[in-house]
Length: 640
Image (cartoon, rainbow, N blue to C red; front, side):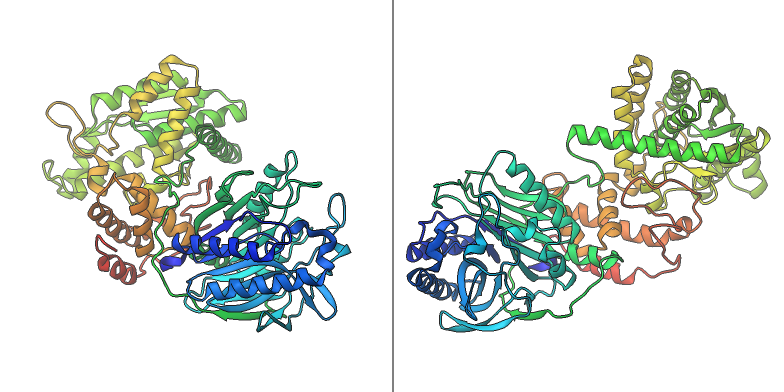
């Protein structure tokens, strides 16, 4: 239960209609299986103690007594289990019969939650037997215990504040305004749905969409347990279609007519963060009763998958769609800026590397949007001490393939004079040696753009902005930063997407070679064999790690401990724990120290859920202390 994780399960035990003793045995077996599986929350189907398809037998006293005795057996079995269980049964109260979920933990009947919306159409005829449940809880004695019966109650774990449970039953989810909406606003981070949804053609797909959609709408984990084998097949068939979703994502599923059991970890810490940052999620607790319960804290092993590239879809089709959309966003944003400024040209510093390549691709698309000639894009290469033949050649070939204007301005002599002016030695390869070249390049671009009535397109990406891997008032500055919202891991895939889909052999060849070129600012002299001497990822670390850390820092506000734990799961077998720790600590140091560069960023389009614009998603003091984050990161060890 550390880091806000709990393990949950949904199960559909094989039942016998109206055989409550047998059904209770099956429920207890399911509880023991779940407990052995490390589960803290188990949801079972609607009316599982009796069977959903009892019909008019629900009005028979022996069945109701049998259901109560079955619940008594379930309560007794729960005493030694570190588990909250939800089981369905009919309950008499105040002269009415209610279709209820019994919430059981540690031998206690925590509460009874009745169904709100009773279907009375098509194959369903529930209002013949049941009454809609009261909202305000009332005390009821059942199976030797007194508990509250009512819809407006939540169940809160004392040992884990993020774990607050709300309950609804089957048709409640299909209603225009499900009770889970109110439950979530009242504080429920998990909603359990005990269901008996019969199987018909097309219903499984709709059910998946409904469960995933509701979990996204109310920012929660959602458990859906469906009736399965053993229900009467007189007029319907039940398939045990069990589902677990979290904030729109389906985490686990027992497919129809399948095993009748599914389990997954819910990240309730993530749900709490999502609600905290979402200003339209307005808490409303009036009228709700909070019932506390206890669980022994346990370490929840992570079995769910965590993508090592959270910015990049794993599915080929989804990834291609994402790349195309980002290119369109970039092109439309840039086209608007070109149109608004009435620019005669747009100027790009082209290096033969990935970022300037993507900026150029977006610029060419912007020209298409505006119906302008690609020659209005001026790509300028500015060779100096570190420029290699490979990148210089790729820059020229790329510009020729795209049909843009290509220009070379060799800045070597300008930089030499600049170094002489400030007393910088030509063999002193320090930060001044590197930054001086970057600032001269920006000077050339800006002044060329001024002279020709244009503006400068920035090429720096989101990952570089996070790490501060840019020269202040050098490549850090432009008139429009078209790549500012694109992380480095995604830059590669967008360029690859264009290479695969462009239909131009020459353009494809040069794009593939650019993809194969080590990432470098080329600010230090090349090696003796002419190869790139300065490789970025050897200096600042692997971008795939930094992008992973960036995603969880910005998107969810997780601390170093939880991010490190997720990284170990995502990169298992690829990076040793000590390597993950080293670059995590490096990330935090750089991220805090380099905020001053982000505080004065040029305009640029947001393309995903995470950006660093000081006018948009990220506002942070440039002189904020990172002591708390570094203290937590430094306290971590390889076994954390």
